[in-house]
Every structure is written in C-alpha cells, then in structure tokens.
Length: 377
Image 1: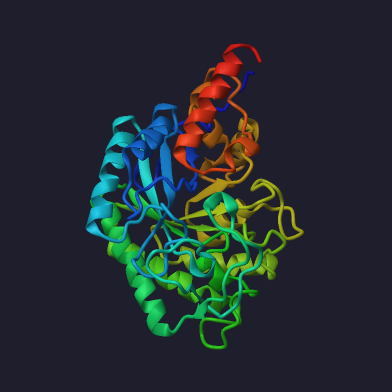
Image 2: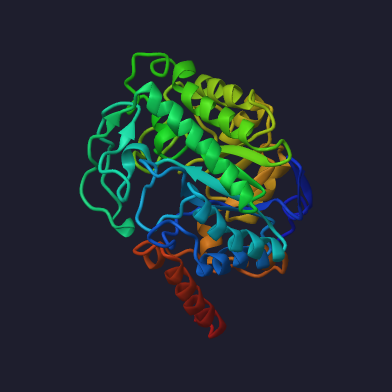
C-alpha cells in the first residue's frame, strides 16, 4: 500500500493546540471503568496506544457529568467528582508522555440510559419513549423506558453539571473538553423533532430546539480558561434512529452551526452514519463544509474516513481542519504510522468487536489479527 498525504500528516495549530498531524481518535464507548466510574490503569494503556501509534489528538470516550441522570451504561467513566477526576490523571499523563494531546467528551444520556446507578427514571426534553432497543453489547435489552420531561430547573442543573465536569476534566490534565450533542443523547434529543415535543422556548423552531445545547456550550466555555479547547459534537443522523436526519436540511444546518459557532473559541465535531465526505440534504456540499462555513469555527470531521486519500481530499478542499477515525482506530491504533510507512492497517471486524465493547476485548482481538497478518493469513 502506498499513499501520499502531505496535508493529513502536516502539523497544525488547532485552537491553540499544536498538533503534529491532523489525525484524531474519535470518542468510542469502552465501558472499562470501575463500578463507581473511575478510570482504570488499562484505560491509560489503551489511550496511550493511540498516541504511540501516531495520532496527534485523542478524544476520550463519552463520560457522564453528574451523579443523577447522566450515566448511560454500567462501567462507564464519570467526571462528576474529584475522585473520578483524579483517576483520569493517569490517562492524561500517559497520553501526553507518548506525544499526543487529549480531550474528554462530556456526556448526558437523556432518555437512552440503560445503566444508571443514581436514578431509575431517565430525563429528556419530552416524555417520549426513544425509538429502537437497548444495545445488548452494552448490557441492555428490550425497549427503552418512557423518560420524565425536564423542567427548566432540571435544565439549569444539567448545564451547571456540564460546566463543573469541564473544570474537573481540566483539573485531571485534559487539554480541553467536547460536549456530546450528537447520536441521540440528551442534547441531540433537544435538537430532534421526534423527541422534543415542547411548546415553550425550547421546542418547535430550530432556534428554540438549539437553545439548550447552546446554553450548555456557553456554560462549558465560560467554566474553563480561554487557552483550553472546547468543542461540541453534532450529527444530523443518530445511532438510535438511523432514518432520521435534520428535517430542515441546509437551513437547519445553518441555524444550528451558526448559533453554536457564535459562542466563539469553540470547534464543531460533525459526524454522519453514511460517510462524512458525502453530499447531504440534496445539495452538492458535505456536512463539514457547511459546519465550517456557517459557524466560522474549526471543524473535525468523522465518518468513514479510513481511506487516507478520502481524508486528504477533505482537508485539501478546506472542508475540515482535522479528521477523526473511530472504527479504523479501534482496529489499529498504529493507523497513522502504518499509512505513513505505506503499510496496510489492520481491518475493522465488527463481528469480533461489537459483542463486548470492553478494552480487554479490543486488546485481545488486535493481537490475534497481528499474529494472523504476520503469518500471512
């Protein structure tokens, strides 16, 4: 395999972070924390692998922000208290020692929690049962429950929880934080017409539906110093409802991205199930390009960019500033070094990894794949 990607592997300044290349590890749920949400030594080893493999920036997995309704899975890490913050410090130190920067994704499950040790009732914009079923590889089964519709007091508490979690993350040594506003979780539930049936100033129009994600992003940006990176992840599609997309198309994208970009000194991390480089909403433009154009902020693109030529073209066209890999990174943490050496990375095998998302499974699977490739199988 040969490739030439001068932009992909060129250094870049990203909101003050000095990165050696433009290849990012996207956030992926690992459910390998302790029962009380503390990061573990194996998590430090896991994330350091990516830094050693040549990734310049790691976005660590979705991490719950409070000790109420935000936790989404059993053994999910948290960043809601000092003990959890202290446990993450070993992870940030290991990644930085290996030569990469690291950001933490801040998360609230909303109506799709399937493992929460603090509450038995989920919360959401409206009392709407989420579509689809709980994921068996995360320990769930059957339909989701009907959540409690949030009061404005709940919304204020959640926004403050995100802000406090951001401060805990910076205390733990993270270079910044990313607000999870995608994939069918709480903030995305406010953006989504199927799950947000509110009739107050947080429902109805796009301007109203983006109001709560905006308030959370503002709270987080205000909670940490200007030199720390803050971003938000967005997706018009979602894992809980693959048929949904932003119904307003280009104009909805404009409203959402411009509103969030107006916070200033933030990035937008956009993803899509069908490939982030593909045109969307029936026009000849992709989502990263729209996000960058409408927000005026830097953009990370994620979604089927494991082909380095496709990633290079996205960057060359100025549609994104960085590209994030998820499945490709999960399969091969040495992806950047292999591509630079002209080697073929380990292929992703969903059947091998999906039944158990724990880190131990990923480590064992990679070693088997490496042995098979060395044996010529």
